[in-house]
Length: 339
Ligand code: NAI
Image 1 (cartoon, rainbow, N blue to C red):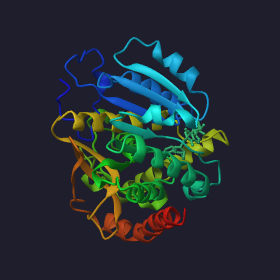
Image 2: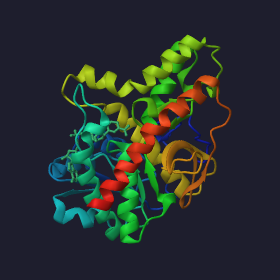
Image 3: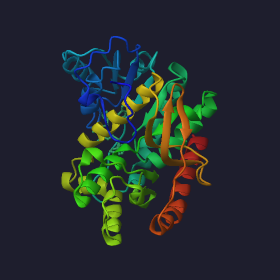
């Protein structure tokens, strides 16, 4: 049933599509940047989610076509397209979950931080509108650099007087998706059974997969764990290079974004034991934001879970990532307070 434990197993509506959910409450999901590389397949996947009753697709342009197309799919939700800033308020009104994949992606040779200047402005304007039109929505921030855009969003909401740390999430699910796939391949276990927490942040060495806690136990050698860690950290760059200038991960990101939004909806609906990793306000370390396992509930974050036991290699990784993550967080906060 839908009340099944989701944890980080990736069990999703994709496998439960046949279940009509007449009893599920009305839920509105808005996607900002819906006509983009991530936005389009994410719109498709959210249209397949039976927990969604209204799907609002917003972008600066191109959304009428995407929404007309997606709206013909015979699933529960009503699809509405909104294009241009003057329609942003209508797109957001009444939203329970707002997913933000708006902004420019990387090209080969770029770091996520190279996107800062453009995407910080986009995120600031979108969050200003969220504070006005749907201040109680859960925010799923996909736009990079997540390590900075989440702190920017928090400052925008604080200024507007609407900040609630339980409702702001940086989407790091793709790191978990990659860690599971790469681990299953190396450990030769069934990928559907794999669980791996990924903590820290969402860029380079700030991405810290905890393979020592991976299940099922694959008995991997330390060199194998180190190679898997590096591959998970560089997974985004692997795709950027393969796309050779045509952007970054879009299809796997849409999948990951759909998994995370589904977990948020289940939490809102009162499904117990919904746990996903996410970059949230945190006291798990001395940094103000940190990604770790989070239990989702009726008001968003129900509990930020601790890191659990770390191997020596992971302890070193944790110490090594802190300065970079700290400076990315501070850069976001500084930007928000100067703009
Ligand atoms: P894209 O360029 O294909 O699409 C971005 C969309 O955002 C475009 O349709 C554009 O019109 C729209 N947009 C720009 N300004 C906007 C505004 N003010 N309001 C609404 N929409 C606006 O880019 P793609 O590949 O979809 O990537 C989007 C973002 O997601 C990038 O910042 C990328 O770095 C990030 N990303 C994050 C990942 C994660 O794991 N969190 C993984 C992959 C990408």
